[in-house]
Length: 231
Image 1 (cartoon, one colour):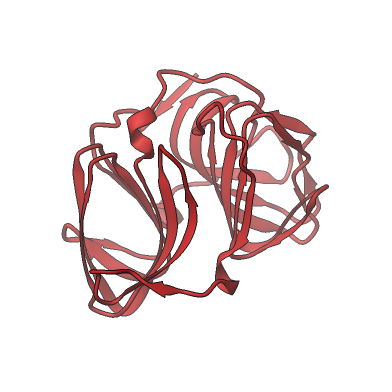
Image 2: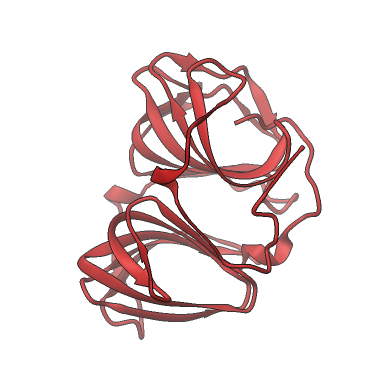
């Protein structure tokens, strides 16, 4: 059993590139753990690195899986997922993950509505940005929305000021550029978790910022998890 950053009433900021890689039980697959409730089967948020030719055994996602391909090409029996892919494999879905050439993904496990059966596969880099109403300097690509949460990719122009209430909490992952949030510098692959009732106060850096952002989902944090996920 592992408890890592399990106090969801606190803000957590992690610069993932400073976190050591930890081997998984599968040869060639390493993890940078961001938060975790459980052991090898866990409610978890991680960055996972696949060496070329690495392969997981087939498994079922009892609590769902959500991931972004950060570099390389992730694969399973359903197809290839190049860098920029945003994927949701809902509860009861099953696959065998692998990567012939190697890849790195940001992945969240066991964090779905148990009744969710909506599969998503979007290449964020190929979607048309739309300007966000009432948010100067911000353009977005909507990725997913249900009664629990909203997920989108946002592009912040240099110097754009972001001020948002997040009554259901929020998570942000910087995918490019930089920003300062509440005075804290966030570079590529910095991950921020803001608790329920919090607020985002950010200013984009001189090259702007590209940010994956999820709001609302932290209202539904379970006390524990079980199932078949093993990333």
